[in-house]
Image 1 (spheres, rainbow, N blue to C red):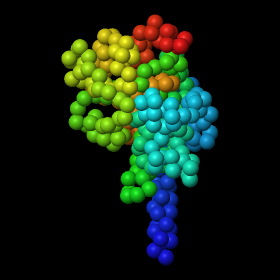
Image 2: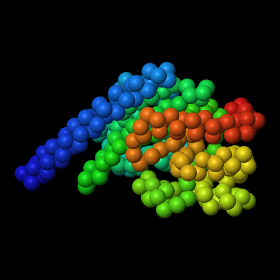
Image 3: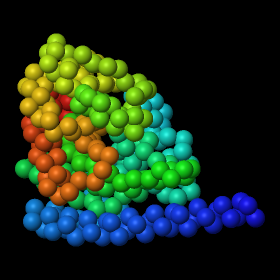
Image 4: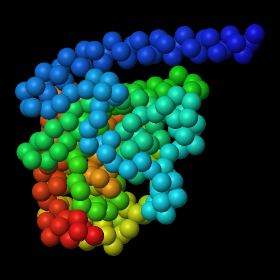
Length: 268
């Protein structure tokens, strides 16, 4: 009876958590729906309704993931996926460390997609839970799509709070990633860069891009670059005006990528 009682108790707690997030997301959905209509974006409240560009990305090949500096999913996330389904975004954005290890189980809500100044963007919320303990949360991500063959790079602001975010994402020791230092000392003081391939990263992060990042250092965006595009992730949900600011930043970031490099990589 002890195990049965524990299972019933866990089910009640999980039900309460889902009810709380549903109420919270109903309020967010109204604000995001209004924003989507203003900016000609599509909006999906439920992940099952979303059939956009992220769903066209390839699903992870675990062996290829290891060779290229990462893992498809954590062991816990793989188990959760088999039993409960999984976050559509986590499954498709398997190459991005920022979202992969947060919680044993994830699902998505409040998905926006459209073009911001010509760049295709997808913004979405992620709800996560741990099966043990009372850990839970919700956060937002904004993804700028890019068809070029991008290097796998993580760019995070320097500082104590940014370090806490990396701990939250299990990014302190990313298997296959290496710290990258640049000749511009002021940049190294403001931003931490780690990459799966240092040479590709030096080619990708130009002087102009470093200057752009330094100009926007106070915005404290956490960036991850990999196959498919550039991802901003947070540890909290973004209000519509903050989603807009993230899209504006990502559009500017891609405009500071050397266009010859992008065109060359796209043809590979």
